[in-house]
Image (cartoon, rainbow, N blue to C red; front, side, top):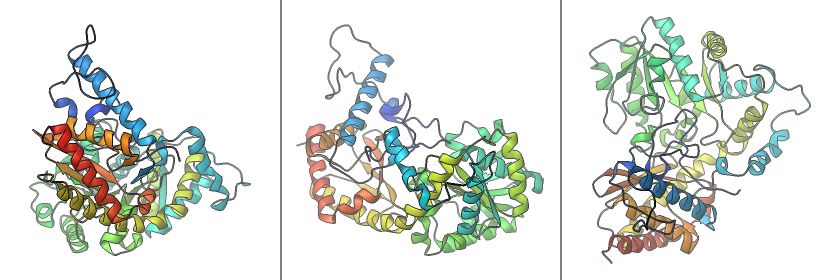
Length: 445
């Protein structure tokens, strides 16, 4: 595998532009906010900050160029590193990506006729997902944006209410260019804007009716946070009391079983419909599915066609998703357990280095992804992270840093199979080494 963890700004998310990736991230949906909101600090080359030397671009163009160069340098440093906490495949070479299908024969009969407009291997994938989630049926979609719009549009037709209650940080609100309202005629109703999951009291207290409650599990922009099982069941009960259906945005639902201590089917049983993604945790080429009652799924497929989602052939994506379900899904609990080891060791290592304040959020990660917040400017933490990768070959922070306020930055940490090679002592040592670089970059050493 030739690449490493990155902001997986998914296919549902062309926008939430952050730091040096503002001109266009690779593919993922990274931390919220934008480093570009800062005052430009000119930089001439990829080696670090410095004054612009004669005749170069100035103003916004100079800042965009500086961020572009830093982004390229960060990518190169991470790709060339010997050790990383995650090595995600979607930034690999085409050869690497195609190699994923080497295992296709283990998950499906490759001698059967290829799919056409959703039959064959696509139907096999749909049946597999429905079984895992304990639902009657499932419909494959090329993107999550399409999947959720279609699902909630169909529910609106059944309930007679186009209002969708959801978190202000939910993916459709932040990353989908108002597609709910602009394309599907849905009306988002904010339950809360706090950086946590909604509460049952907030659902019960909404001042207007709504036809559906959408819960993003985990809520990525709040730090990949989940409610407790008791809180989740109460949220669902509150929606039922309001005569609303419940839809789970489960793009990352696959990795929630450890936190909830429940099977995927038990979790999904709480909802009327569930959306899942195939490329985030499962590392497929793309794609999504919505699972629910068979009559709903039949309607979903009609609207999938109307939305342009009845693609002629989808076998590469469908096969890669089946491979992901076979290979990656069983490993996710181990990644979650290791994320908790990494989070604790990061906190300890930064403290040992004398970092004045650091926050790992959640303190005990709910999934295998979490946030790290530090009291430094984005330029400082970015340079320290890149230099560490370049000079030591070890990458703690592969993702872009995001400006959260004056002298305050945050990033996301992804823990995958590569992290299983790290001991707690390894992480503590690397964190302490990173802390010393922060002191150098900030001039406090």
